[in-house]
Length: 226
Figure 1 (cartoon, helix red, strand yellow):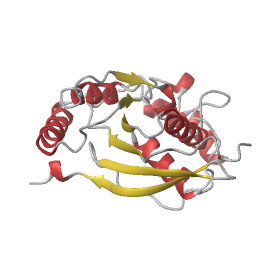
Figure 2 (tube, rainbow, N blue to C red):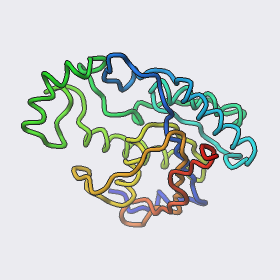
Figure 3 (cartoon, rainbow, N blue to C red):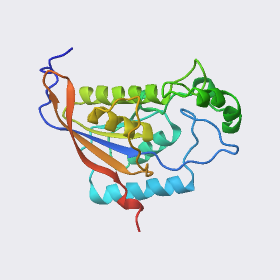
């Protein structure tokens, strides 16, 4: 384990998380992680409002990294943000995706509920994946997303990161930074499409390798109001 001396950052690192937007619905509903549908009209309007706000305020000026999960909508939003983050290319990372569904990917929800989901509910633990023996449970996905965030902070010390992803990444930052056990859900919070949550990494705690952070804003969605 590191003593933390090699992790010290010369200046704060900003992490802005942009929540994914509304997407087109499947009929019938299907399970998606990497193959989620594109933005629908509502989602495109949400992104347009966000971009207009950012162009007016300049609050993301100076960003050094533009990251996205591999999800379709997250990538579309990140590409839309390029107009206000000139010069930045979108970097996708599967570490920021929702829990991998493996063999359940693309299956109809009703069919899954009638088969694999029944056994899962009867013997539920947070470590069970959607399909027995395949894919990730929510807990494993949460841990993987937290690890991806930490690795990103280590690779971008002193930078300004803009990350577009779904609710899993947002929750993973709270669990990781607050030191909550990943097997437990102590609270839930609203996931507002295209809302901004921002953390500032102030330093790495010596002797622990744990990030010392400050929550600057949560679910900032003023562009959707009025």
